[in-house]
Length: 385
Ligand code: GDP
Ligand code: MN
Image (cartoon, rainbow, N blue to C red; front, side, top):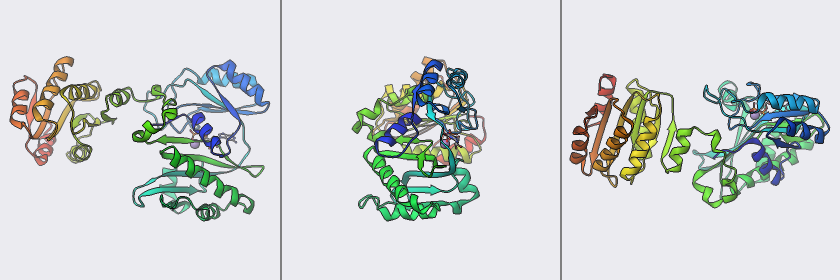
């Protein structure tokens, strides 16, 4: 689960990480009032679950309350399209109004989970303010990593090491290391999957301030944090994805034309590889789970079909706890409910496979069967199924 910048910053502040003073506004009048309260130049920042706002015009420096009011009036209520959103953009319901910070240097600092070291890793770079993927591609030597052993926890020397790598002024080394320690506590105590500060500013008066903040929480641990669940803004998500998560279905919208329904995450990944290697492009990742009911399959298939980009469908079911006949009935029901008649390529194996195939072949739907993944790839390449 992602949260807005203002929510991330308030959590950072509660862990002792310095952030600019400010507040959130949902109307131009509120934005003007907040700027008046700050009594100095301010930044008006759209609150959306996407980065790249600066380049997209979603961040405006203002000198007066009137200018803040104008900026908020322009930004609020219209979707913002950034390099990280789809072409339809994301809705803007709020702006963050903060005191403008005099910036001397922009650094990058993040904590995430590193699969190779099997624990949290701190990532720091002198090239802040731009996307870290860009730095990784162009100047990988400017990215510094420090793996943290989760049993020992963050050690101050690790913070000092990174602070030196960032060429921080001697008087900032200690506070930088302390800031990293605070970040680690926040990360662990709230079951985060990502805490990213980009940029972490060195201000013209020699302080470290988190100018931007992105936090993602591990969905599977949210039940331990009811107070965090309240921060959820579903309006920022893909409508298909939030519908799926309501039903405990794992669905990720992609931009291809081949819808796919699979049971099991590993099989779903392998299936997407097969689709790609056959020269097609997946419209989604969809894992109905190992023990789905007919109703759940119907809902999952329906969500996939409601994506207008889906032109063909691949079903790859390995019948174990989920019986093939149950999956087949769910698929047929979803297609009938929606009057869908697109070609469906089905690979089914396992419990009650014969009954499953019978249900599909008698359904009148445009179904082609394949017995192996190799046959799936071959039939998909032929485009005719
Ligand atoms: P993003 O584009 O969505 O990542 O939004 P950021 O909050 O990171 O802002 C983008 C850029 O705007 C930053 O890298 C800064 O260069 C600039 N910026 C944001 N807030 C301030 C501020 O208070 N003072 C100054 N000087 N620049 C700012
Ligand atoms: Mn940023």
